[in-house]
Length: 324
Ligand code: AVI
Image 1 (tube, protein in one colour):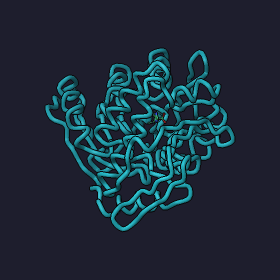
Image 2 (cartoon, helix red, strand yellow; image 1 turned 45 degrees about the horizontal axis):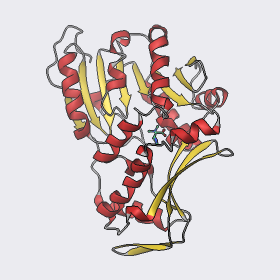
Image 3 (cartoon, rainbow, N blue to C red; image 1 turned 30 degrees about the vertical axis):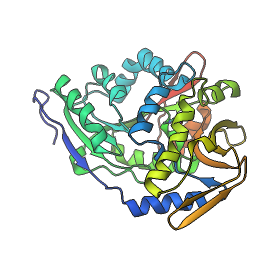
Image 4 (cartoon, rainbow, N blue to C red; image 1 turned 60 degrees about the horizontal axis):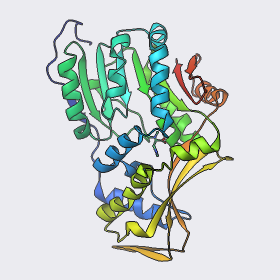
């Protein structure tokens, strides 16, 4: 049951749904490295340093998605709230520092804010200070990896929910995974609920590639940081100097691909395994799919959403959909 609107909350509630199993992570990394082509799942990009590097990426002039999405919310949030309804439970998927959702509190007036991220520790500081600024909103932090299954704990509360998935993180799923995720989001939003989601759109290749290969090399550092994770988690002997960051737009797949390319022939070794790489051979580290408005609308309809109003920016570089 929701607390009365006048209740004063002092501390958020925190729930950690899953704990990372070291052996399973090592197995996942080794399987990726031994694949053809070699790959590392993109979730490993986000350790403490990787998350900070990603925050720095969002400040870069070349990385248009964050600021473009912000201009869309600035211009249209009131309209979105009028359709979505106020006083809901706002469920922020991949909340990070909770800033994007907090900017919408004034118009959405949520009764409860549920911030979901892979690590509840990462949420603890941001959510506690947000709770002090908004004592009238009940806040819950949930540590969960929703990339394969989106399930919310009972602490998230029932009733009508507005799920919030900004930043075009949906682009880091394959279209098949995206469809599965959207179906789960449809179910998790509950009867009368909705999904507010940011989607990056197809645009000229030069704009896309510069956004993922910036001259300051912040994105390169973000990608190369994966090698430190391989060394720390798998006991691998990767040397950062042996690799270079590659980002390219795959037009047929409609996706930006990030790779780590070997500068010379080398062998990566770790306890129980090794992987030889020829000079120029790549480890695939991330896909970032770019959609057309029509293509994403189709995906939402296939996932069971009947209504899909959307808003975009002057260049049509980014779109925010409200699906219900
Ligand atoms: C988190 N995600 C939406 C970012 C993107 O644009 O695909 C991750 C990223 N990778 C490189 N730059 C940013």
